[in-house]
Structure formats: structure tokens, C-alpha cells
Amino acid sequence: QTVVTQEPSLTVSPGGTVTLTCASSTGAVTSGYYPNWFQQKPGQAPRSLIYSTDNRHSWTPARFSGSLLGGKAALTLSGVQPEDEAEYYCLLNYGGAQLVFGGGTQLTVL
Amino acid sequence: EVQLVESGGGLVKPGGSLRLSCAASGFTSSSYTMNWVRQAPGKGLEWVSSITSSDTYIYYADSVKGRFTISRDNAKNSLYLQMNSLRAEDTAVYYCAREHRGLGRFDYWGQGTLVTVSS
Image 1 (tube, each protein chain N blue to C red):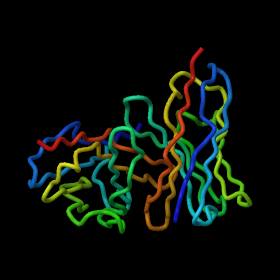
Image 2 (cartoon, rainbow over the protein chains, first blue to last red; image 1 turned 120 degrees about the horizontal axis):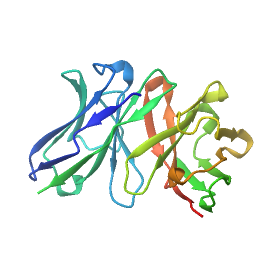
Image 3 (cartoon, rainbow over the protein chains, first blue to last red; image 1 turned 90 degrees about the vertical axis):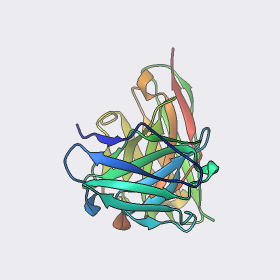
């Protein structure tokens, strides 16, 4: 069974920088897994932030960036705002027949 | 404006069936891969099923294989999820989400519909 692992929780100060990661139990994450990142606030549907590793949607603030880092997919928030407090999920595509979400990272802005 | 609106959720007994719908507007859904994703209360997101553009390929998570069926009606620009032999662990909010598979791009999500499986 394929498992995608994220940090359960992270805390960052307003204006700071934080990096969330997404690891695969099958080995290094590459661009071929088309990593996507989503933000979800309580009571709301997920919102797409980043697709195919490092591409922002038109609605994604520039302070969000995606990359590959040390064999993992990564989401970096620079200049964190209070409204960035949310749950963040990554999604990896294992050849199209299987998509697996990470367990989510609860980001606290404090 | 792209919109996805799910409907059809509700309370059903274990072993029962339910059919979810996702009405798409602002785009032609048959040109995209469409997905169902669910979220159990207080838990994370779980991919359930995908149907690729032109219905070329259909995929299911192991947890629902053999019990759930994804389909779409192009004339109605709608996506469906037929759920049979429902179990308590199928209780979740079910979302539909659009994907441009060639770009690895998830973009739009619906607001979700709650399915509760309980006696």
C-alpha cells in the first residue's frame, strides 16, 4: 500500500517562511508524480494551490511556491499571512491508476 | 465561470445504495478527467475514483472497487457516483474535482455532499 507522508503540524510566525514536504513510500518524488497542493480551511472545500510540482493557478498568491526538495515535493510559504492558517494536502499521481493524498499538514500562524 | 455542484448525499443504512451527482457548468466536462474525492469526518482527503476525458479510462481506489461506479452524462454535463453495498466507513463528504490530466493539474472543486451510512 502506497503511503504519502506530510508533517502533521507546523507553526510559523506572521511574515515568516515555512516549508511543507510530501514524501512517497515508494521512493523519491519526481515531477512524474505531478505533485499538487491544496489548502483547506474549516468547513470549506479544498482549494487548489499548486499543480505539476511548481505551477501556480491564477488565483494562487505569489507567496506560495512549489518545488522538489531532497526527494520530496515541497510547498514553501514566504511572508506568511494570518489567513494562511489552514490544512494543506499534497497529492501524488502514481501512473494515473492511483492517486494518493498525503495525510495533511495543519499550519498554525502564531 | 467554472462551477461544480454536488448533490444526492444523505443518510443510508449499511448495505444500501446512493447515487451522487456533480453538475458542471462553464466548461465541457467530457473534455476533462473528473474525480471523486471524499473526506471522512475529522479526517484527511481520500481519492475515490477518476474518469478520464472521453471516458477512455476509469480508475477506483481499492477501498471502493467493486462497490462504486463512476460515470457521466455528456448531454447533461454531469458526473455521477453510484455507491452500492455502503459501509459505515464510507461516511464522508464527497467532492467532485476537475483535472487536466495531461498537465497534472487539479483545479476546480465542488462544495461537497455529505453521505452518512448508519443504521
